Structure formats: structure tokens, C-alpha cells
Image (cartoon, rainbow, N blue to C red; front, top):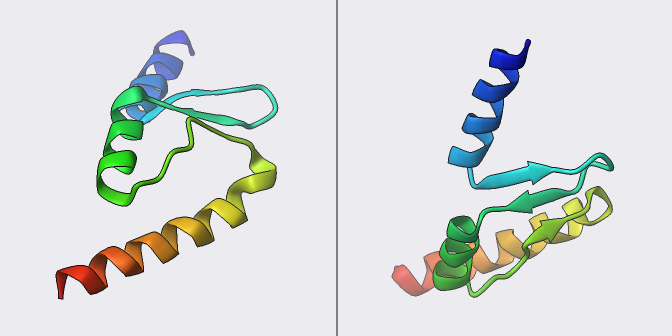
Amino acid sequence: MHHALQINQAGLYLDGIEDVEEDGTVVFTDEAMMFYRDIFGYECKRLPLSEVEERAMELQERYLVLTHRSS
């Protein structure tokens, strides 16, 4: 069980997730935050479950702006 948890934690880190708190809040790695800030102008180090839909819509809007600039 301990080994399986280590593997899952390593996978989360590779996906840009530093931690998932007991209440479900996601804490992103500094590297992921630099990427989002540099590419999208977006900052969100901690993402509570209550904000997931709002943040997803915000990221979608920023992505669409980015893709329209690239076309």
C-alpha cells in the first residue's frame, strides 16, 4: 500500500500537483504555476473544490484567447 501511494504521489507531481489536501483542495507545483502564469497569465496555487467550475471556465476563456492570437 505504501509503495502504491508513493507511485500515485509521484504521478500527481508530474501532472503539476504538489498535494491534495484532506478537504480536496489541490495545491499546484511551482513549476506548473510558472507555466500557467507564463502561457496564460493565470495564477492559482491552491484550488478548492468549490472553485473548480469557475476556474475551469476562466482557463477555457484564456485558452481561447491564446489560440485566437496564434491563428
